[in-house]
Image (cartoon, rainbow, N blue to C red; front, top):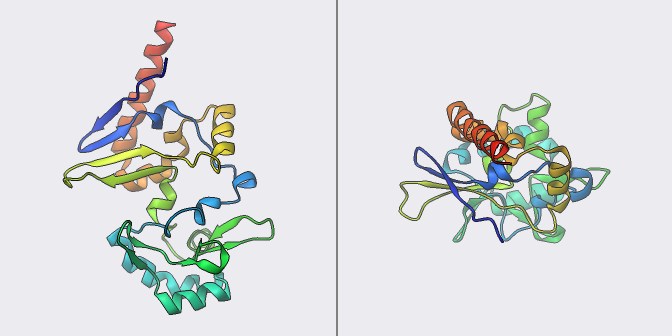
Length: 206
């Protein structure tokens, strides 16, 4: 019998209970950062992030490939998609990799924003949509609520699901920094409290 998925409600957010029920830890040695090139468009950008991308560009330029710089100069630092809204451009010549991503000597795609952030060059880590993945947050149809869902790629993220299960790390704990960045400390504490209470209840029912 398949377990019915439920929804956790915090303020105006509808959160899939998979965030506390499922386990996940990115395994870059296996996936190679494939989410940076696997998809129908570049990384979604909040409207509030557009100016940050513009302001950061000259500082992250040294982290970019020559092909990426040429593509950015041709398309712009971000582009608009009818389906996804504002997104980062991609390189068609390299399997639609995000222009801000670059493969290192191990074949792992590294984000220019994140590299610059880690080096202390900029104070912005990367688009929140990337930071949150495999969780996707979208405004509801009527715009007065937000859906927060767990959406790993079936094949690409399989190693991450396996590693998370092995180490018993729930999705929401793996994404603690990103969830706090997006929704705040209070949100995370409420979600953690719900997860703890549910775990305690399940333990008493065994």
